[in-house]
Length: 132
Image (cartoon, rainbow, N blue to C red; front, side):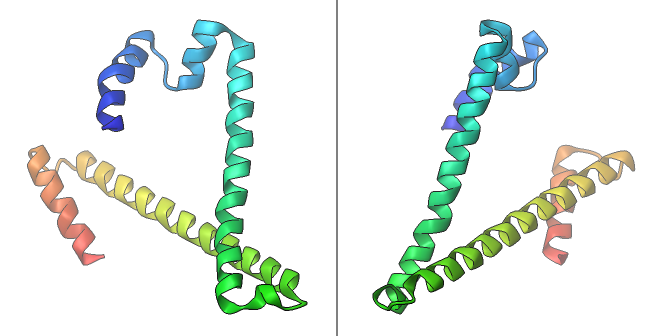
């Protein structure tokens, strides 16, 4: 629902103004100070939310394994936080790699004009994804 709303409302406005991001729109509409303030607020919110996303599962795992009741619970909690961070980084990198490969495949297929229509393109990409 949010995607359809955004595509119907924001994309035409951005296209007509010749801008690419919300931050560019904020600068155009309200000035550089508002753009910088919004950027800083976004960064702070992401840092806080990332901390919660990493700390919450680590605390839950520590509670389930019973390490919170022991004297060395802080050591185990730190270990779980490090492991959660590593897993999150690995999953993020894997997702970005899949996205890159998918885009690369589509661009190469478009360059070689192998697909006569959008339907053929989608069918060929689905076949390639099944092979992977």
